[in-house]
Length: 409
Image 1 (cartoon, one colour):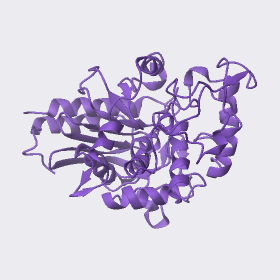
Image 2: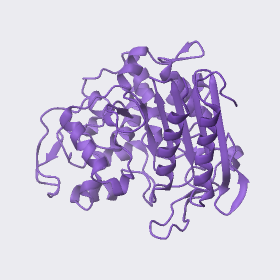
Image 3: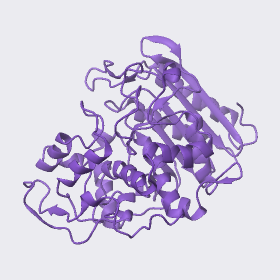
Image 4: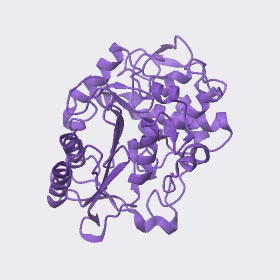
């Protein structure tokens, strides 16, 4: 589709394609689907194949595992409940999550699990929505007793054993101390999965059903869910985790018989969704439109502004920035946005081509979606290459660089 009136130059869009073709042509990314929109114009590129040895070509409706790119989407369920006053930001979560009563907090991160002090206050809804409730994935303390316990209890995705059903997951979570006092420190992942349990218990529906009824359905997101039904499975590529040293392609997850081929026991808000570039475009375009999709209000303008505004204190921001900047060999340059809203990164300083206010996030399965309110742009890039190597991340970064050089107004 052309972008004649959108303020993108024809030469700039050609460069977007050329740069993405270079990534696929390198042999390190078998295929990708990219979408960029501005105003009423949308441009889509489909390049390469579903498997690294060839086979079916990528299609616009290819269904990808969104991994952590799930986070900015699943947070919408909580915003619906806030809009309806079924949740309040500074209420304790205990009425719905009693497993988190009487929390203990480690005296030091690398200490034994029984060396604790009482939590200074209860965990609130705000703590869960801002990823500051006190427990999360911290790549700087891998190997400590608390991180070992998180893995042993099956509290995070991508382990050999799938996560247990929500009530058992909550029971296990309740056996562990917190790593930090509630509200004190931003931490990754576990809050986003906890959010799904909270939404399910408040609404009386499964997390997936609530999202389908209140977010996916109204937005026409017909291919977004926590699994791929059999009649669509041929649209899902293999997911690869290349060897970090040799670059050899290892299959992380097959489509047929893989972990997304049947409904999961745990519908994970942190990384469980599958989707397409058009479905994600509909959601992020709604956010740019202040919560409205084709004349129908999905979220209040205030809810959208809140979730896409930085929520972190300077101290919390410093810790998060350190995680991205000092572990650049792991993050490959991602995560350096400055801020975090609800479920997504928010750019608070101009550190690359993107302006302040850009929001979105990336996934470890090779997916990325951001929206830029200043320029009215949505960009979605999906690959089937996991973040064991920098290849997908380099494609994300180049995708956005070429989008910004294509602006011509």
